[in-house]
Length: 464
Image 1 (cartoon, rainbow, N blue to C red):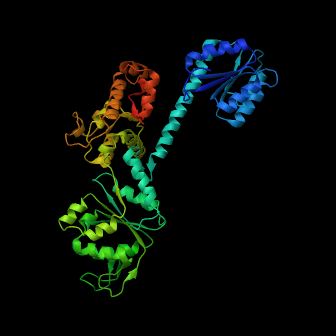
Image 2: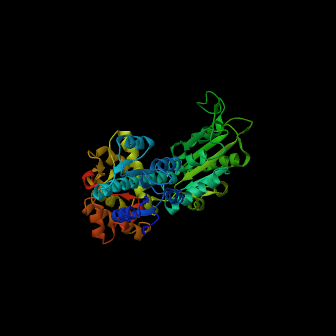
Image 3: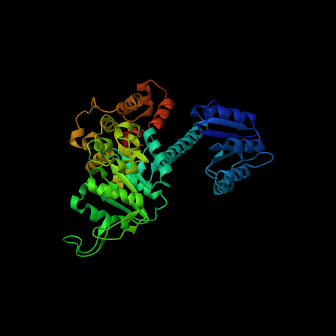
């Protein structure tokens, strides 16, 4: 067995000839595979069951068991295993039978080492590509919660809080800067709550005329004011047994805040002009980009309503605090816009990624979404370059001196890798030499930063 790491692709060679085992393992060692050998079929199957190698190279004719029987037993356990049969007694019918049984290839002895090494190398590369694809799919699954994308520590903490509070909350406050996805958090909480099958009703408090607030929320009866020509249920009644999302609640008038507090306390709503209250069962989510404590100090927000809402508070982090999520968000938005615009867009060039990583993102994820939507529309190639970005990003951007702190070491390492890949035209070996690290080390760092470098002929690296 070679001294490869556990992440290396593994190869099992089964042959009853010790000299063949030595020859093959020595010839294939330069491929960097984890190589196991067995000198009889039963020992070979034991190794397979314990180590589950991705590639098996086995002789066809051996004592105790044929290579075809080994093939059958292996594929019963791991159908994706690549099995190559070797024989010194070739026949067309045997080759056809082997392929029909699921063998990946059938080789005649004596083997030509060059073509064999090429064949095994091609198989290993295909397995690496499948692993990378599966890694990206798994990453996307684990880094997404109800349409919210992120895997940084602040995002993982937010996901955890959402999952914990969604089954239990009655009223909840979501705070964060504009563009950080407060509306997505609210919708995620509703979908994970016990009232997910009920209505999800939204009111943007900053868009409602002050004199109509109470009518919108609580409804009115006919004749209660000029223009009230018929009874009208409010949004609380409409959201009965569901969720009411009050966006920008910091803009709600004080008089309405007092009535909202009573509804939250009593779960009763009284229409404007009505004598009797109606029972409602509504979960309330409120969001704001204001500092409500400062608003309380300035007598612009009721303190009792604040404490009623903020028994649980979820803060949406700004993008500058989650820059390690930038590649994931880039991939997510590019894929979405490529599908929407029906364009073949595979990602961003390294210099475009560098430009985006140096921007402060004062508009947060919403700004990033708009930038990539613009770029996806403008690009005429299968990768987004700097010229496709909005004009204000064309000039070199630097973090503002007032920008919040980010993980400087991780960001700098990712930036250096992107610059090396750009200089090398996407060639990983050349980029590794520029960085003065091994190619395996570079591959580890590419996975760590969720970057992928395509072949030089396919354009620049894309965020994964």
